[in-house]
Image (tube, rainbow, N blue to C red; front, side, top):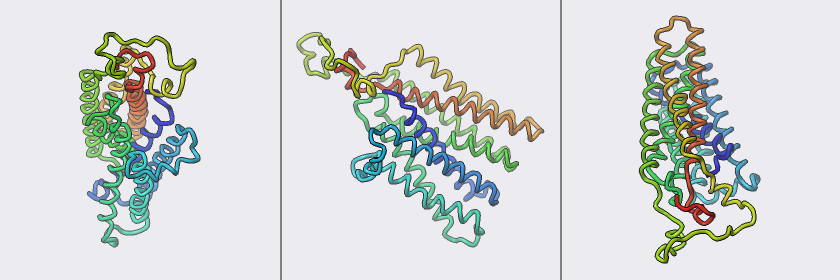
Length: 317
């Protein structure tokens, strides 16, 4: 599949934003974070900026972006529509929770835990719907498996944790507990990602030109002449190919930059007495994490092959 920049930005930015909101609200409900306005302003503001950026970027992949609102009308049958509706609805409890955190005392709002719980459920549901946009596609075997929703949810939490960890350190409000939580979430993400890579390597699609056309019983089937004189939409979007050796290199970059280096850098923070050096290290861990997640998401699309490519010259997928 063609790894469009707009879709890559959408899935990364919105996923990190919802992961940040989830951890921020859950941590506040559990008393892990101090109740003060600067932390709320910076964290909620960063999360909403990421989410809005991601949602807006997703419209650039549409042929007619001005008609994007129509996608919201197909919620009964479309995961894209469900994701769009939930993305909008989620702003209500998360925004309300943030406002109450900033302007009211937590003890004075009995309904705050209920609002927080609704926000947590909606954040997780929105990311799940995003993953199901791809996981529901049976013609793409690399996506139609249980590891795709698991990976999206885990990476949402780990990228959100990296950003929240940076905000806490920059404001001098972090302790080693959230450092450890961040490391655990990154480890969980890399384990799920390895299972995903192993699955798509060991479970190649069995479709061939013969099975796709129904002519396989008559002998070898091959394309005599292309159906089009120039590349069409299906060939551009569904027929993207990446060499195996390049995919292996990019997987290594994802593994090292997205998982190993952030874990190593965050582990160093507890051994450093200088707050300035700790802040520099945590910012560096975010930068490496960003390189890793961009590479991972590019690979997620580039390694996926659609069955329709069999009709345009591919021998198998």
